[in-house]
Image (cartoon, rainbow, N blue to C red):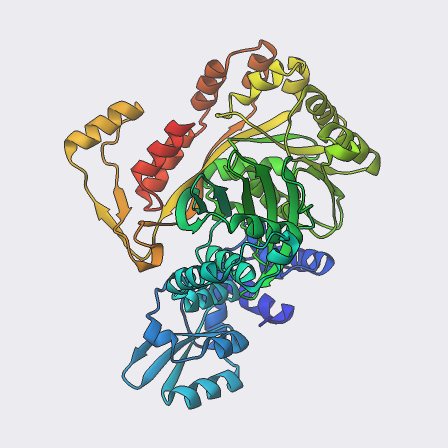
Length: 559
């Protein structure tokens, strides 16, 4: 359901949360870029998703529920067939005597209400929940997929034949069903990657969920050739090539959303191994606040992305969410008044009205060559997926010097560590000092499951040891953990959130850069100027009940 802009304006501006001028400016951008106005308001930090949902529920005169956070029993879900729940965008979540509580995207949908009454024979109490929450809640209909998955895999493994013609074997029903089941289960488990690894005696399928790899199922040897061939056919790769790595893409629709697969196949000792990255294209990119940026760090970043030139650098290891952060920044900056160009490897999200170039070494399109070409397209804002060499670094810095805002990433462990890394690449220190506006380091932590979170107090001896190990006092620190429930597969964690350190390059820091100061000296100066370290940001999120002290230690120490 999409409310008219005038209705939304009455709801949101009338509430006093957003000024009329800011709303009108966001509405103009939303129309120009064909985006939801609520998304633009959220990207710009003017209001959050939950507040919009609560205000909308008040407009409809019904109660609000964040249906995505509720663990709904299967007997309640079964009251409304999944097919009709998806058609009407409705989710039953509680039965109280002869009354059924129903989360709805449109509480005024008379046809949906009448269907629910007739089908259940109960009095229906409508609740409002936003579109994204409804979609996530509809996924709970797939809770039984775990049992179905094992059954489908075992049945089809028995039926799979050892066909020598790989093209023919890849089209056989058992192989198709095995791959479809793996992907369907991965989506239901919110996995970011699927790993298919060929071992000596078996084939292991693993999912990366919330940054942690988990074994899912083991397949018998003999099926892997047809399974890999099926993946190759879907991603337009050569099925008869087994000696060199291959990369491809595939896109399919599942559960009301488009899922893009980024596929990498490499030869191993016992056979080919596959990694498939799952990217859900229908999802709204998260705002900076939703990613976990808070306080002064958020203010610094917002202040600096509005500057007309200079460089904003995001650092961290692979998989720490650097690109996601840059896309969130681009969503804020993307208006009709500016030209944005990117050079990426690979392009992870398609953005309206943004010129995006894919790195392709086979055709000579490296980061440096692509960036040089982009400069002839008169951009205002440039995003470089990664600084990998001196040439790319120098072009990016000269771009920032000549009136462009440059967003890019670098692999270093801390914000301060990025400076010596640049200088080691051969970049002149005075040029670096002149262009860097902000350096931000980040990591991703697993979030405590909101369904089973509990507060606890570790023994004093443990707190003292943690304080000693971390080199910081934990006196008065609040501790939370997830007890484990069906919603989080009894892991105690569900979803991820970032921890950050945001270093604004002050005059003192610029002077230290030109003196080629070490990362330790730069870090010490930044902290003295008020920079919150990743460790402290992590502890703040522990106190807020967002993550555990074990997660902070794991991630900070790992890197």
